[in-house]
Image (cartoon, rainbow, N blue to C red; front, side, top):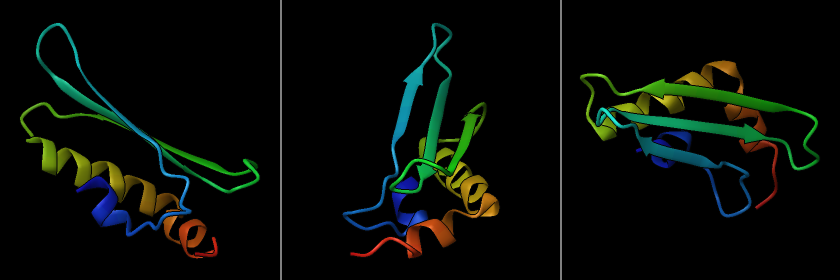
Length: 77
């Protein structure tokens, strides 16, 4: 859901890292950055009561609010 909501493409620098802590809680840390690395947008959220798909959507929306759409659309593909 994370990548689907961002609508990235093969050249989009969109890394994400999900992990489960010792208590079993899922988190997702992700970013979107420009190819030259000068601009980097970060988001990190814990699932809490959310399922994995909702967590991915939430992190993607946080990045879109920061301007990820403009970065992704500005990268040729």
